[in-house]
Structure formats: C-alpha cells, structure tokens
Image (cartoon, rainbow, N blue to C red; front, side, top):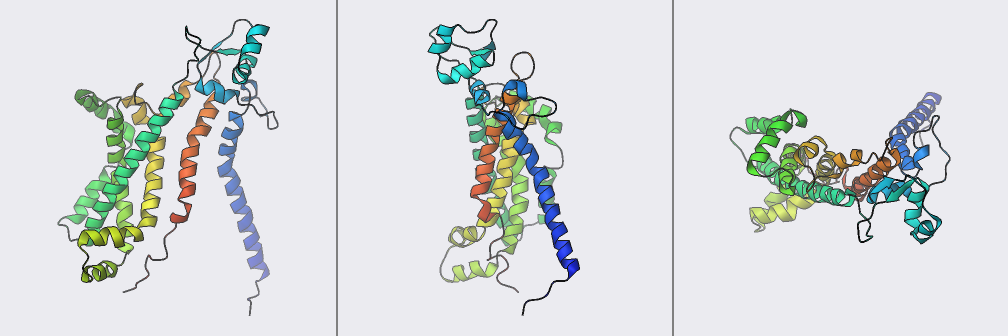
Length: 319
C-alpha cells in the first residue's frame, strides 16, 4: 500500500526542486555566457546591457586559429571576392589574416598549445593514477612501519599552494634544463597529483573486501595476478573518479604553466589570455579559446559518468 504524503512533505519537495533548479542555473550560467560570447561578433561581446539575441558567427574561432592584424583600409572588392569564406568574416570585422611571403596563412599558436595540454594532462594523469593505485594498495593490504607518518608526509605536499613553490621550482628546473619542456611539466603535475591520488585510492582500496584476494590466492593466483584480475576491476570506479580529478587539476593548472614554459611546451591556460587582439581586448576570441578548452574535460567526465558513483561491489561483504 502506497504511503500517503502529507501537505508539508509535498511543500518541502517542491521547495527542494526549486532550489535545485536555481543552483543548476547558477552553475550553468557562466558556461552559457562563455559559449554565447564565443559566437558573438566583437562589438557585441561587451555591450551593456548584454546582448542575448544575436546572429551567431564563427569569426572568433577563425581569429583564434589564425594570426591577424588591424586593417587601415577596407579590403578591395577583388581581394574580398578572391578570399575564402572564413577569411571574409575576418575582413568584415576590420581585420585581415596575416600571410607570409609565399601567401601562406600564418596560424596562431593555439593548436600547438592545445596539443601540449593534452599531452601533459593525459600523461601526468596516467602516471599519477597508476603510481597512486599501487601505493594505495600497498598501504591498504600490508603493514607498513610508520604508515601514519608516511601518509601524512604524502599529504603534506598538498598543504602549500603551487604558486608558493613556483619560483624555487623554476630555478631548479632551469639548473637541470627542464624548463619549457613537456617532461618537466609532466613530472611536476604527476608529483602534485600523486598525493591526492594515493589518499583517494586508499579509501577505495580499504572498501574492497580482502576475502576476494584470499579466495584468489587459494585458487593458485599470485599476488600480482590477484591485484590485476581481482582488485583493479573492483576499483574501477575509484580509478575513474581519481582520474577525473587529476585530469581536471592538470588541465586547468595555470601558475606552473605560466612560469615554467614560454613557447615550446606552453599549455593553453597561459596562452588564451594573450589573445587579446589589437586595441581593446577581443573577448569573443578569448571566449572561443575557453569554450574549446572546456570540451575535453566535459567529454572525459561524460564518458566516465557511470563510473563516478561507487560500484555495487563496495561493501558487498560485511564482517
């Protein structure tokens, strides 16, 4: 027999729904603002009051990927007609695409910076999650002398904000030749995320019943085989959650990327603000770069959405 809800319960549920909708709108508003600004022409990006209804265009993305300069005089009809469609939208904004002596388009540094972000974030995430999983398994399954002190030492590496150690790290990296290199950033982000990975994965490892491994060992599995065939599948949700947080941290990191790199290994976060354009800041181009920069994190989180909640196996065996 279905329980009858009282009027107070119904009222509370309605208030809760309204509160959830308001919070959702508040959190989604900045994302909508960035996405809409990325498709606005430059003259509508900073209007007061804000322009909500407009004709979308892709000129901010064209200007993001190509170098351009301010035009003193409008393009001639012949030049305008001979230009490809994507260059015409730049002409319409009073700018032109920069070309070399051979007439080849000079592309901006955004694609290479975006690729650098992918290389550094993915590699550091794999290393941090991999080493963190092995370390957490050791702390969870074996008696380690001074375990509490070691775990506190690992956690202490996250007690200082990154900007505090940025200058000493820059001096050390310059001394060993790791500044402005992919390897240098990967090592730095891996070390920064490792403590978080160890602590988060240890919590998941502690919840996996030891009886699973003991049964596998009785059946003739080695410790390593039991780890890869029994523990890792059970810890998939924890690995996914840890990977998401580590990837987001490495992907969004700004201070180290700004100080440790200049050109060759520079990532997207310090490069996007430099695309201010000529004269007044071109916020539509900056919004276009930010919008594209948000996509990998959104896609990665969406693909792992089913693994971010705890699996049914956690806590399945009660002692």
